[in-house]
Length: 353
Ligand SMILES: C[S@@+](CC[C@H](N)C(=O)[O-])C[C@H]1O[C@@H](n2cnc3c(N)ncnc32)[C@H](O)[C@@H]1O
Image (tube, rainbow, N blue to C red; front, side):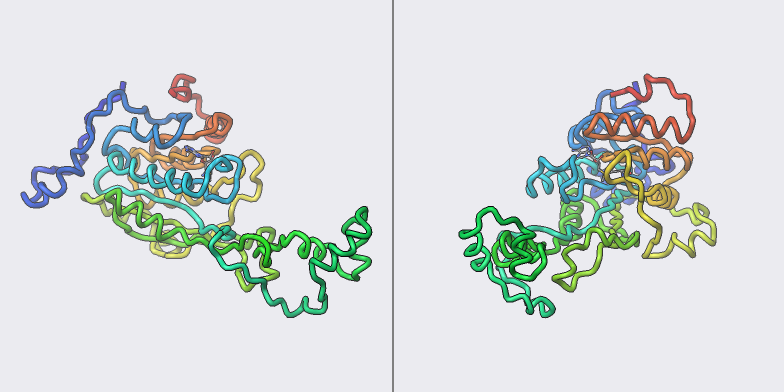
């Protein structure tokens, strides 16, 4: 059993001015009654919303994670947009009691680039290069009524256009929806994340841009728009009020100059998503952990996936707590931790669930 009382290390609350003691008291001493809290250096299977309630209060120096992005991955297919918002809002709220005063919550997330918005007016793009094909859906339907067995390639040959044009006219399935389907737009998530964090009691502390690589394969829809390809994500950093240790020695001079004090971080994303569909590169949690915590601190990732954050934490001499909804990913994380660090940890630690 892990101790339930977590003191705020190296810091004497009673020495704060009386006014501050009153205003910060509820933050420092909130929710202390977690009996038998989750042990460190373990991966837990379950819903982050439930598991977070079992973490010892004021125990996490930095929590860093990348949640479902609401882009149709297998682990989020069951979620409506409202469910997705509820998941993230609850997860952020449940972080507040467990982050150390002066500690950080770091969220890596991206805007939703093709967000289907029922309310958006259905207006077809005026695509200049395509005007040569003055083909209407009605023309195709007319031909199909006479030749119902014709396939797309027969129709394309008949109308001297591409099969894609036939498809688009028939199904309105260009990514912007044409005039028949639901139109899509960008959904900017930063405002939502800020709102949830402020509501929970955190304050926005910093934000960085992670420049990955240009994902051309995700940009089929750019042919009918002026939109950019998908090539960056956000790293939002929120602060829990309290004393933050500021230690210039955490990074070397070169590290401060090249990334510690820089707003834009550039490193490639994970190319081989062979064992998990949406890993972030280890560079991301490595930097966050190095910058925002001390050796021996505990790092949390409540969407641990393949275990990247846990491996980064161990490499940096920190402890970790990982949470994952899908048992197969939790097993993958445990295996990756074992493999990469070649640590011989007793099953009882890994399997504490
Ligand atoms: C974007 S991935 C994170 C990948 C991770 N950063 C890595 O490098 O492998 C999000 C993960 O959250 C998990 N997940 C989804 N909903 C969850 C929930 N409610 N509670 C815990 N984990 C969840 C998914 O199964 C997925 O593995």
